[in-house]
Length: 284
Ligand code: ZN
Image 1 (cartoon, rainbow, N blue to C red):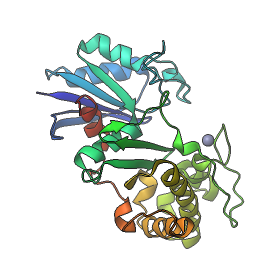
Image 2 (cartoon, protein in one colour; image 1 turned 60 degrees about the vertical axis):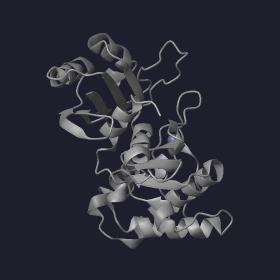
Image 3 (spheres, rainbow, N blue to C red; image 1 turned 60 degrees about the horizontal axis):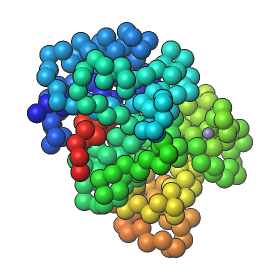
């Protein structure tokens, strides 16, 4: 049985074909252009396959409230051509098979839970630290949804004493995403994180923000594992710093076990998106 999985990002869209075991049989990346143009390329890729179902992990925000008139639509996005685009509806009309949609970070979390570093626990939190910051929680195979989906990247965090940066979130200025996303790093230092090398101060400040958020998430959600993915986390020195700061801030209040197992990198080599999108189509 072939299942389609789409990871729809702001700059590229990855289309894949796989099966329920998490095996990917074919994959293609296309640039995200205007919706109609992009959809034509998606349809073209899948024209060679007979799919049973299709799952989509999309950039957001998207409306995931099944009772809403705009369910499955992209909401407010800086990508104006996609604003209010009915992504779910267009795919359903074309493919005429069951189509499932969720946020990119929720499906990444589901993929790691099913096939990756979360497969031995019953709850995990996945945080992506890239251009933006988002997080998703899976417990017992189910993605936590709430009314639509959580927006954990926008929690407030205390300013680092050595950081005078004002923050870049258009809604909250110095929320987590406004201070610690890849875009915030680039704005603060005038270059991308991967060009900042091992500058201790840069990663010390970054770890401070991430650790504060992880402590709050842990106190509220009590995940068994916290998975940190996204481009910014390719900076290896961040992991030990974040673990150390989370330990210090928690101060033994909550048992977190071995910190290198509690806070960990993802395992699925940037295939979380498509594998999670495929996993969305499969019941528990
Ligand atoms: Zn914000």
